[in-house]
Image (cartoon, rainbow, N blue to C red; front, side, top):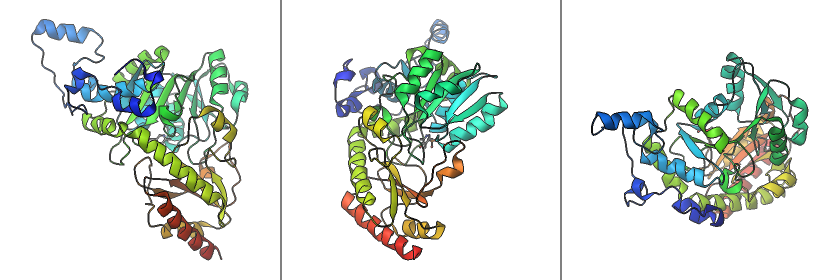
Length: 398
Ligand SMILES: *Cc1c(COP(=O)(O)O)cnc(C)c1O
């Protein structure tokens, strides 16, 4: 709403961002404007609308309505230095558009080995079929990434902390190398969101989020976004138009509704998760806690240097045990649902095996791993639940 978003607190920014009077018409949360056809007054009006940039102008449903523009504009305002944001029907669709806006046949992509598995599948599948090669790099490589850059390298894809294994990357060092070598950087910023890591301000070119997670925040809609630096907006927009991408107004409306409480939710997720992670680190049956704010997490010092805080998703490695005793732990939990995704108000636990999805960044763990999404239940209740789970694990382990 104001141009001073760099100087306002997170709560104020997420409440007000994108709520332009001409889009809300005075209604607090911009309503759902559903549309395919937009009617013009006359032929001259139609010609005028079609011939120009349709950004924030009603043109045809695929180019969005004030419902999508509100959320896109809000996400742009949360990333100081960004030009604009494109919304997608899922996080994976956002990743695909970001990559395709940059890469052409013959190019090489440097992809972090700890990337979300569907990102790896996209590189090994569609990108490969298009003649784009991928080189996987260790998430802890830092400035050493310079040694991997060849004459065809075009872009570097980062995700920090890494999916499942939570390594924190040296983003400033990698951005510095990329800028010196003229490469595009794409960051999967789903975990931190711009509130905990303002990616564009830190030099990232394309900052992507699975809005399905913290932005929607209620586990009831799929949505993705890419926020672009000025130098990368036009290519992102053109590619996304060509791919026919459009997020539904209903889902964008849920995204805007979720966004307004994201700062307070994220704060609570972060506080509870840190407390629970610290408690877990001291329990019998837990071998390692992979939480970026704790010293056992690879890249912890970088996290302390670069991030404004921690989110609510982390993992533990059990102390020994096997598939059956890990299942005994998870199955004993009452307050943690067993399911994919995260970022909603409810706690979740799933078994994870990061080394099954790693090529160059395999690590040794003390036992099988469990990923925990800490929801908005009371931390004391979650701790009591985990305590019962660990007792079940120890009993099953024998
Ligand atoms: C969930 C997730 C995605 C994909 O988002 P969808 O909306 O499920 O397609 C991408 N990156 C990360 C890190 C995720 O956790």
